[in-house]
Image (cartoon, rainbow, N blue to C red; front, top):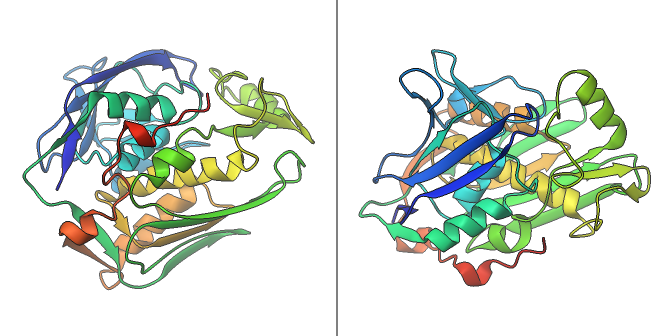
Length: 305
């Protein structure tokens, strides 16, 4: 069955790239509503659908916009938390252009959602079943979806910096795996990239407290890594958030090699452009128990922060 939150939850913080302070609230919504954002600072309270077709080109994050040009950026951690907690319907009100970065992971969102509780709604979950492999490439980067009974994510990264190096992780995302294994993994970057981004007016809200910053073989952020493979875990977190823009849970295997937000969105566009590659299906009791947020509870939540 579809779920929404039992109660509204609020967040306050700054955007990673804009540095703009924002207030945000995630509200319950009825069955069939889906995930929508509403910019309360814009005239008329502009609404923006959290869908793959609304994604606009943006550097280093996922940004969605409506036909009138109202946008919200850096939505990927929030979307991952909603998907990973099994929240299918929500209205997100925000008074600025970027979702707050908080600690750089999805854990603060997950904690708030699980404390608020989930409301079961009288409607089946409509999922996207992958029927045939779809793949997109850009240089050495690749993203692929292939048929599978439930969502699986297999991700590989490789960086010259020894603090990151070459990492690979594969997980079956059923039954709270996201909450337990990925939700508290933080965004990461190299110190030289921070300097370059700030020179271009980006990462204005970034600090050592909301991102893992590395330089060579050193981790500059206080406390070091939460996991030895935290960077690849965070890339998997990002992938789940970007895949959540499909409009329903994905039933398939996602493989990412050096993939990022833009490539995953290209993958969704390629999937939906081929009517033979996917089908919308209502999840029955058996399939529903395999979804990422099925049965998740506060007992699955163990923040390392």
